[in-house]
Image (cartoon, rainbow, N blue to C red):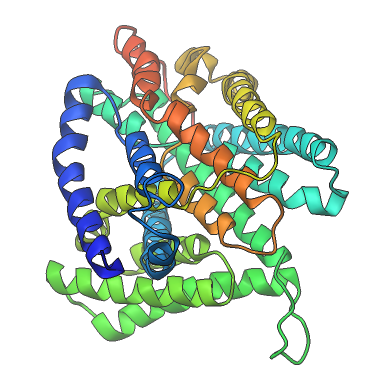
Amino acid sequence: MTSGLALVLLVVGSYLAAHVAFDWLARKLVIVSGAEYILLGILLGPQVSGILTAGMLQDLAPASALALGWMGAIVGSRFLLTTLVRIPSAIYRVAFVESLLTLLVVGGAQFFLLRWLFSLSDQRALAPAIALGAFATLSGHAGIEVAARRFRERSTLVTTLRTTTGANACLAICTFGVLLAAEHAPSATLVRPLTPTEWTVVTIAIGLVGGGLFHLFLGDETRIDRLFISLGGIIILVSGAATYLRLSPVMAGMFFGATLINTTRQRSEVSAALYRIERPLYFLLLVFAGASWRPSAQTAWLLPVLLFVVTRVLAKVGGARLVARLNDLLPALGDGWGRALLGQGGLIIALAVNYLYADTLALPNVVFTTAVASVLLTDLLSGRFAASVIAPATTTAPAPTPPRAA
């Protein structure tokens, strides 16, 4: 089987699965499908059946780069300023403090474990620890949306959950992007090495320039087919440039999406074009991630996985309750509202694939295996987690929305 045929079959299968299995499972069983595609990728990959060989995976790398940039653009398209300014400041405090607490707790615990377990220096252990902290911060929004639609809930709780998943994604993507910029290898073609701050600015600039190019060539185009093709071309350019420079295509894509959605007059058309292939690309990336998985050469890889899962649950549930109490939102959100944040979502796979192919970072297989294991453990239950929090809220009187800060 050629790599081109393999890509066509994967895309067609992912598209059919997204439009048939995903909707049915979400509607009937409150299950957000996805983890099984990682298992399918592992079975198809070179570690098991070898149907997808290492050479094929290398040939399919540009398609994975497109998926990374597209997922980043979708995240950025959710940051519409006219919508964000209507959210009360107390919800933002809860969202970002919860995100930061999870990053620090999980990242700090992983730093000490990895440094001791693999005899790494402080500097060498810092990158995988920060990456795992960023991964732990992420929470999937799909399960929350499925539960909110099922129970027709539009309370302060749902607003807080949506805001928190957005804050989780923003902090995780930016942290990971800065990490790649800080660990960037010196370039022999430059007059002087760029600093981490300068590489971070370059990553952001790629996304901003991509948004400018879209307006330059598309103008006031409203036809969805032309918008879709043009978006694909620009995202290929943005993600390809970031990948070539060994930066984060997800972060560049996020700034592209945020720039585009806040400057275009065709927001609904652009959003529809972006979301048209979100789930097929997500499932394609899951299969690619599963096929790319390799057993870690380190025999103690299980300890980081266990520590990641345990500390993430404690940080998400305990941290969410703590910050809600400190901001007087606990009556509106409930003691266990952090359970709805336990689902990981697909963005962690995007960042994990990015980490796996960044050859300057330590323990790539351990970090990648940890991300895959977390998705396998939480993805199928993310809708159930969200429903267990949102469903009780429908039987109680809604609490008053906190006042907006002056």
